[in-house]
Image 1: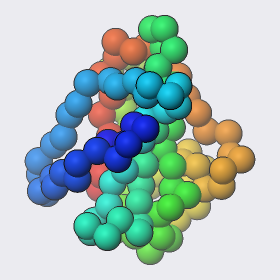
Image 2: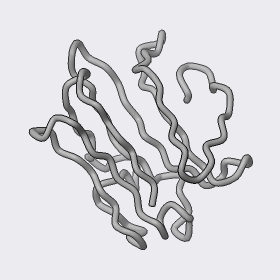
Image 3: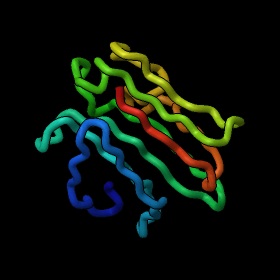
Image 4: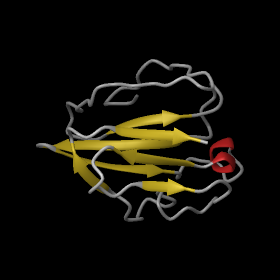
Length: 123
């Protein structure tokens, strides 16, 4: 989890989960949960978010994700407990998924209540 400083790397084994409370960045920027299948972290999927009042603005980013990544091969997506909110899903093998940032100028930011439960599923 990266705020203004990189957090400590955590390993999540297959079948396990990771959860955290929503964080804020003291410099006003967003938070990024960076996921990699190796400790080198040169192939990264990101869940990025920023709080504004009771709204969470969020997105998935594949900008630093290699097209042949295990995450791309398996697919990934975010579901939200509030069914009125838009979710994002990248199907297995979709290396150019339009629901995840591919380029810095893409427009894929979504918003929902800060009180909703967000679940990012890999594979």
